Length: 184
Image (cartoon, rainbow, N blue to C red; front, side, top):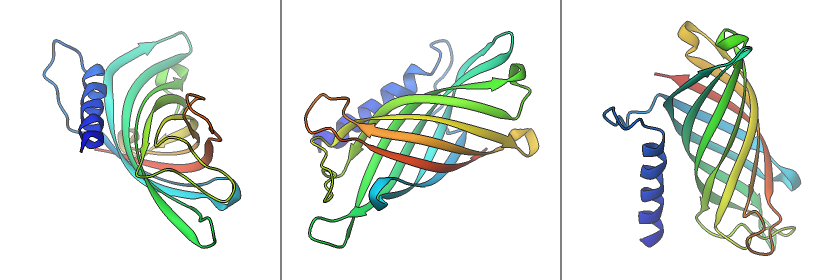
């Protein structure tokens, strides 16, 4: 129960951090995301998420910089100690910065994000063991926006989950993901 309350409080704080103080807070998501990917030694993942755009936009000489927060629910599948497979559920909250080239006119973008992750139990396989259920979730990706008002995105992301060396062992887990986003 304490973990659930802490996660809900963290989600609320992250959403509030992206909201300007002078406006009413709107918790309606701006998009839904789907992702699937693979990692080393046959580890796989798939997930869904909700995306909230920040009221933040900066134009630079050659690019537009925007930000969003994504809440994800992912399922991991990995080898089990002793044989077979096991699944894990991951909750992640990741604020991200996005750069769209040609002052925002290009359909191409790159993005970076660092957030937090919580696993339903310790990730343990025959080849690696996490020491914590709370970890950082780092990602970087490239994507392409298309459709009416650029309401759709397809992208490729690299995601890394680890505790940043706060507790040993800290082998981390990497995934290469294909991601689709539909905007409302």
